[in-house]
Length: 388
Image 1 (cartoon, rainbow, N blue to C red):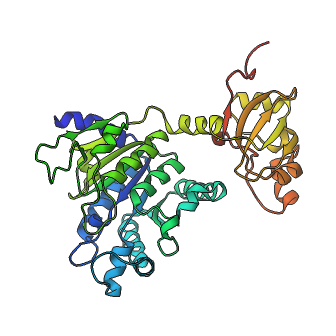
Image 2 (image 1 turned 30 degrees about the vertical axis):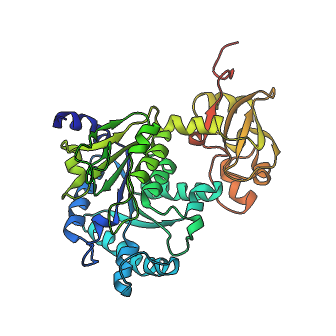
Image 3 (image 1 turned 45 degrees about the vertical axis):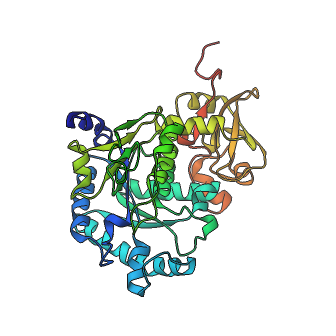
């Protein structure tokens, strides 16, 4: 495979507007000493700075807390009990966050820490809270550093590896590119460490059963993931319209290496993050309420605007913030669907009123929109924007 072909695929990384980078424990933490690989971390920080300087918003998903904490606590090598993992995470997370803070802030980059559990991306309202926090941090110029909250997660409610967490974060943040930095340079037809005839696969456009069969288990003594988890992560990412790259992190400046044509495997989506989210809202969610809007709001929605409370005539049904609602025109025809920014009770209070009045009406300052345009999709067959 020629370097020029890898460089061509790397345009997805170079041109990404919202980038998620996952760093595994085996790269971040030295397996023998249990200490952070500082030189490597500094080089990666330079790569992240370069991405920011060309206009990309960057999210980090970083493993390493348990690996760092177990050394500090003197825990023996091998598999840890759940309570030992939780204790190690509690100790190691402080050191992990401090390391990222040092290397990023020394380059003028603001850093924030988020700890997520599986429930934070599975339960609707918690998902929306996490999404909004990430969006706000990115808008304010910060780099969120995300890890699983291992101190409270149990075996039943955890991801178990940060490959899948990174894919969920990419989905939640509507990222257009996800890079999994690993101890292997991509996907092979078999384990290259065991089968010398294993063939490298540079590009995957469909995650078929044959592709899944090629994945193997974890090979690192430090991390918990393997190629199987990466293929599972790829399915989540590409379904959300996000391209995903699996590349070796065992070089300094790993992102720069990908951009320069280093060998890696790209899993390619058939849609965009925006289109995937719109499809999810339109086809996968069952509306739990209805919102009737006036003619002015109908026209505004047809121009791609958000739905403001002032344009709402009536509210029906029982729904909470984050639930799907049907949006009807004055004649009762469904013209759109979207995710409500307010519960039915609060929507009833603010309907027909200006956004500036929301705080005085419900007692807190929420969003200006009842349904934001990013959470709204016009339905096919709608008369909006068509002449009679």
